[in-house]
Length: 64
Image 1: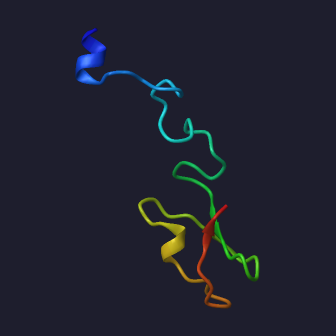
Image 2: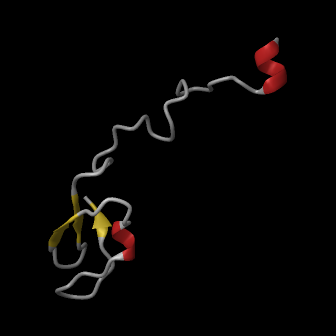
């Protein structure tokens, strides 16, 4: 009953976050990839790939 009153239920995923933390590209390592030309650059911690532009063609980068 205490859990119902204060909302401490874990739901379907058992409190593991949005995707369970095992999605490809999750974590501090990996690459940012251009969807247009395929150019890869190393992912930097605390910088989103989607905020970067491809140095070759200028497209928005995506996380690998």
